[in-house]
Image (cartoon, rainbow, N blue to C red; front, top):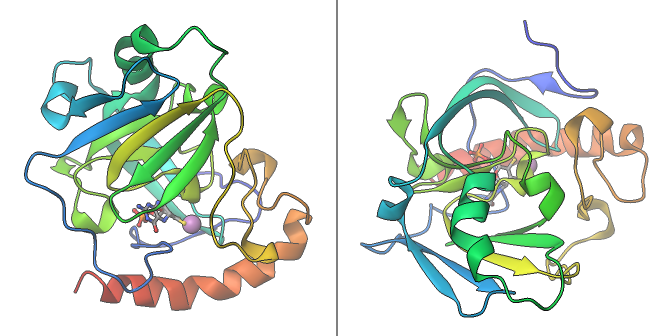
Length: 221
Ligand SMILES: Nc1nc2c(c(=O)[nH]1)N[C@H]1C(S)=C(S)[C@@H](COP(=O)(O)O)O[C@H]1N2
Ligand SMILES: [Mo]
């Protein structure tokens, strides 16, 4: 038994979960690439094939959703985000300002905002494989972010864009007060919500697990 972060409960397997709800995974173009924009001298396009040229790593990790479920012992394969950043992005940065935040965008329009410091942690991957197979559409094909020390909403699936910013970008999600996301979302500090104590939001979030998991599963049937 792995020790779980506070307020988490183990689930069997690894459910598909997300704000996509029942929508099927997005249609991915034939030659997918990751567009890098923001504080770079010119936008750059990183073809997925280019990831094969970078040092590849495997990381065994548990995955924790802010709603309260944890999937245990997932084996991710890909490129460390720190490697991606140092080798592909850093050489192209503008000299105006220091990068503080990174936005990860998915083909379905999803977006997560991460402090550069958190994104550079050694367990953060740009992942193309899970448990010995290429990523499935349910779990973010063809490539996703995985940041196991932060709640799952940071880990954008179907990654199509990375923006680098020199200050915190505006959070343009249609959030209700209750679903506002914590800017760091570190699981061991139980950073579930920016204002409310974690223990107060736990039962509310937990009540959403079943309906969201059911809807999400419908989208891949
Ligand atoms: N593109 C995209 N990425 C996403 C989401 C989403 O709706 N769309 N949901 C997030 C949330 S809230 C969680 S918990 C995890 C779930 O990942 P999984 O479906 O592989 O279990 O994906 C995250 N990344
Ligand atoms: Mo989540």
